[in-house]
Length: 244
Image (cartoon, rainbow, N blue to C red):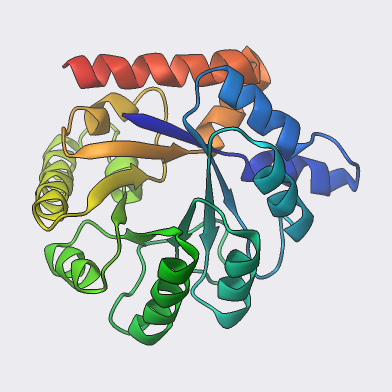
């Protein structure tokens, strides 16, 4: 299972004080050295954390895969075409939200998604859609010709509390079914949102899921463990889940 680390919140800390540090590029290099298979960065419309220059520096410097999360807008499609990340992940985005909430509406945004896919095919960029683990949404995603879907695990992660075993089992079943269908339809399946070293093993145990994108919990753990050890601890948790 590939582990991609999202460095957005390194930029959040930097921007809070208007300094040059902590540098998300240095964080990316540290994550790679600790075993990360890729670096994820979300360039938001309001540039609340990652900025355009961060994306350009990441593209020119990291040795692993650059996964650029963007909304399916003309501005962001144009930036992706210019920067040429290895992967673009199309995500829903609302200015007032703290973090990405829910999956992409692949029906209402079909026109913009098709525009992004057309650009990406010409530029040889992989396309992933960040979607809810819903079977109909998985089917609609396959129709759009994308190479990958990333299943939203936020609902599952909220259920890792006492007294929510049945609800957690039901959501985990929904995630498994979506992952199985995604693979059956010829797409790679990733997962992300809300994953920590304490709950990631549950997702890692699903064989159809080949990649996880994790940011907030790794950066939070880094406050106490250091970034290198935080990545290594996450990798170990994933491997325990993969082994069953």
